Structures are given as structure tokens and as C-alpha cells.
Image 1 (tube, rainbow, N blue to C red):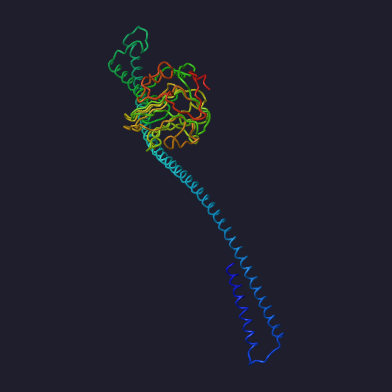
Image 2 (cartoon, rainbow, N blue to C red; image 1 turned 90 degrees about the vertical axis):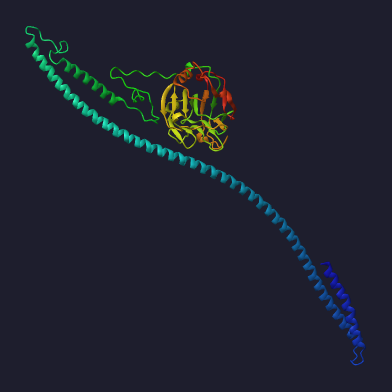
Length: 473
């Protein structure tokens, strides 16, 4: 703007002399009429005054334009600063949105994995239910056929009994004729004089047929893969066993309580369902397992069992799991080996808030598994992960279910309660060892993991030094 002002002033200084020189030239010209000197001077002053006015107006317009341009420059700078601030805010918002999108993607992936896991478990459960329904239909047909055969045999036996009664009555009538003068004796004390071989053979046949029919009617073996209770006065006997034909039922032995067992070592108390309450067992499995025994004293403080044990590897976060969600049937627990294969085990006695001793045993030989609660065999089965090996090198935790190696915990799957006397073996314990362990007589040799391997615990998990479970909190 200063350059424009200088140009205008220079133009004014050049233009005025030229104008005065032209005016003097006209005044000195001989051809025009001569005018008075003052008239010309007056006109010249008027023209100069107009020129000043025009120049002043022009300078004022130039000054106003300079002020406007200066204000525009200031406004541009302020707008630039505002745009820079807006860009920074946009960048921060974009970073926050990206972070939230990443969290959302992680949550979606986790939800998808859980949905896939639930879907596979539902398919496996549907398949198991289908097989069980087919097996039950076959059993119903077999039971109906056995009942019909039993009814036919009973009808034949009834006819034989009536015929034998008639023959015995005829023999009794013949006794006075053969032995006159003697007292009449009952058929049970005096043998019939005629056809003794036929009567003895018929009696033996009747006795043998009756025993076979009673055994066939009372022997009911459970299905090969069943989690129903195996003991109790109202349940069928185990395969290969028979109920007594006579005599009162034997009273079941009371379960062994924890008050008689001490020297169990430390106990772990999980006070609530926080995902921070977790215990890692380290080292975990250092070699592949073809058999497994998990035994522990357990007392639950919630309406569901939660997760007792979880073993995760890089390729499968459910290589070995014992868990019961709060959304599942109370008292049931899933025994998972190599997800999605699992068996549902009944553990309703554990919901009474008292100490109980449990042993879950599995072997890859024929896929056999057993569940002992307070020394009693309550569930068994076979063909569960037959020939399978549990790989080593994973993450083994107590109290939480892993959705990833060492993490991905869910409070709905957490265990709330206490554990004591925990032991894990790489072989299948026999019933005598389970009984000795539950009664505190002997701790089976060869345990690969105990609570002494609890390397780290959650923030609120308490390790108590009491050795008798009944005195633990």
C-alpha cells in the first residue's frame, strides 16, 4: 500500500507543473483573446482546488483500501490458526475413533469366536441328544420285547405250576391206597412213589427258569456313555451286577466328610466372580497326556459351579476345561477335552455350600472316563476322545475359563468358593487310590501338579494355611 501512495504523489507532482505550463502557454499565445490576469488566476485556483479534492478523495480511498487489506490479512491469519486447530482436533478425533474401532473389532472377533464355540457345542449336544434318543428308543424296544417274553414265560410257568399242582394232588390221593393204615403226610415230607425223576427234573427246571427270568427282568445296564448316577437305592445296578432277590435293601454308606481329613496343605479362596481372581499353575503340562486324573476338595459359594480348571494352547483355547456357566443348568459341569468334544457331568451335591471331594479321571484307551464325588462313582462313560493326546506347553489356570492363552476371562464363568488338596496325575487313578485320597489315608504317588505349583494368584485370591478344610474360610 505504501508503494501505491508514492505512485499517486509522484503523479500529482508531475501533473501540476504540466498543467501550469499549459495554462501559461495559452496565456502567452497571440491568437487567443487576452483575458485579465486575475480571472485566469482564479480559474487556476479553482482547478487546483478541485484537483486537491480529487487527490484527497483518491488518497482516502487508497487509505481505506489499505485498512481493508490489512484487516483481511489479519482475518486470514486467524482463519489459518483456526483451521490448524480444527485439523488437530480432527486428527485427535480420528485417532480416538480408530482406537474405538479397533476395540469394537476385537470385541466382534471375541463374540464371533464365542458364538462359534457355542454353535459347535450346540451341534455336539444336538448330536449327543439324537444318539441318546435313538439309544433310548432301542432300549424301549428291547424292554418291550423282554417284557413280552417275560409275560409269555410267566404264562408258561403258570401253566406248568398248575399242572404240577394237579399231579401232586393226584399223588396225595394215591398215598392212602398204597400205604393203608398210615397217616396221610404232606407232599413236602413224603416223596411221591411214582415218577420221582420227572418231578425232580421238573422242579429243577422251574427253579432255573424262574431265576433266569427274574435276573433278566432286574438286570438293566446303563448306556455305554451315560452321566446318570450309578449308585443309590432307586437306580439300576452297574453292568455285570445283579440286585439281590430277597432281603431288605442295604443302607448306603454316608459320604466321607472333610472333618475326618486333614494335612491337605494350603487352601485357595476365590471370594467373588471378578476376572482378577485367577491362579496359574506353572509349569503346566511338560509332556503330552494320554491319561489324566484331577482331584480336589471343593466348596462352592455361588449358585453355579463356575470354572474349576482351564488349559489353553495357541491352536485351541479349550484343550482341557472343567466349567459350568451361570447360564447352564445348576449343578452340571462340562468336561471338555479338545473343544468342541465334551461330556456333561452331574455335580448337584456341590451346590450345598459344603466341602466335597471330587475326582475326574480320563484315559485315551477306549476314551473311558469316571467321576467320583465323596468316594462314590456318580458318572462314567467311554468313547470320549479315544486315542487323543493333550499337548504340552499351554496355559493352565484355576478359577477362570480362558478365551485366549492366559487371558480372555469372563466373570460369568468364574469360580466362587474354595479349593484344597488339589492334585493332577498323568495316569488314571484306581478306586482304591481315590478312596484313600478322599479319606486322607494316602496321597497317590506321581502327582505332576499340586497347589505348590500355584505360581501367581489374582488380586483377591486368598491362600490360607489351614490344613483341615472344615476350618478354612
